[in-house]
Length: 552
Image (tube, rainbow, N blue to C red; front, side):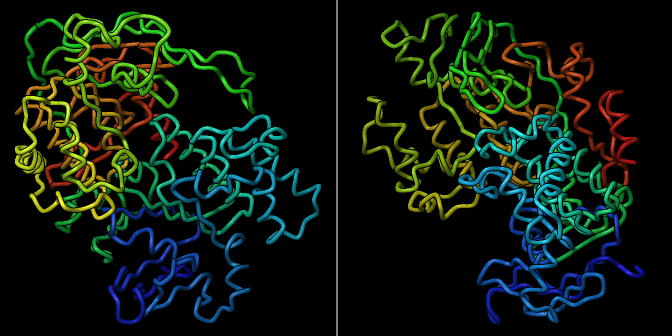
């Protein structure tokens, strides 16, 4: 590549001079205006390489070999003031979680203005005009109120838009976007990425997109770099690399993508869980986009879940799907309607309530926050046995060991704390904890959304195997339709607190009737397998063709 914007030559990142190597001999060149995706599992080194591009490697990690050049200038020859000048106008970054990268104690206006003060030689009046214009471009109409607001007053998607606005205010030559849409629903993810690409094209900004979301990378990137345990194992043009991968690790990543399983024929039986005209209202907070009053989180929702069935509930953020799950689990109250378990209401003190509490368990999205960090894994799993009077305490250790084996963990894990485990291992512990009482009904709330592609595939297969073994019914809450494709028997689509469509998995994914369902489907491209052992991009609905043209 002649005259690259950024060139990484034989870069090695390590802990000290003699410690473990985080990135090993990386070589990469990026042209002005190019969008390059870096993919790989957690721990592959992709984020550390991205941070090194800004000279922001966290201590004690440092560059122990190689060099990074920006517009031909070597980083090693730059003073600290020169590096600070480079960040912002030259290279900037959008981080994975905007709530932790935005200062919660500072108003949005002050955070946006900070970069312009440091790197832009313009007056205060012009700075404000630039900020208001950028907020308008990222879809925040009331810019004046937004500038005076704090980060917590915005949704996750809005906070990510503010992060993009903050980065693009500097009109950088290179943007590093580290998992910019991981926690967002499908429609918001598409909107944020379309916005990001639109702005970078307007300013001629090159992009390094770090992600484990292969369909998103396939959609937006012209080239893909694959990293494994700190090494770049393969790179190439997107269609070519995905269509005919050469490295075994790339093929492993692609093989881990969720694929549609054969539809199961389930017998017509009495529902194990029924929801009848459920209503849930919350007091709406006065703030930037609200005037107080009542928020109707769930409106007249009715559904049935049969024994042994996997019912997926999908929808965007704020659609009411998690609130519905928490009400069914007995964790949130409701203002109207009924929840029935085996035909009995589940109100405290009612007939069948104790049976319901024994047979309903929940697996949460983030196991690190749902597992007590002060308790060892064995104690966490055994906690569910305390209310089972037919299981003596002398048998708890054996039951815990069996539960760990069922989720492919050995008995030694019982003596570890949650922080000693990987994300996938923690989620396995959360599943073992939920299943140790052999429940007949399990709720999984975004149980795989925070996991990388290979770990997600392992957890989905584990859930399917355990469900086949124990026969529990499952309410699976997700915003990832590719996961629905693999695991669900039926699908319910929620929008603004209501069910707008429901049916079998194949009916919903292949023949959607409601406009909102079609919009959801259009937001997510599909990667179909090819004879060469790779994948190719396909769009689920006609609405996706416009996005394909945009990406092209």
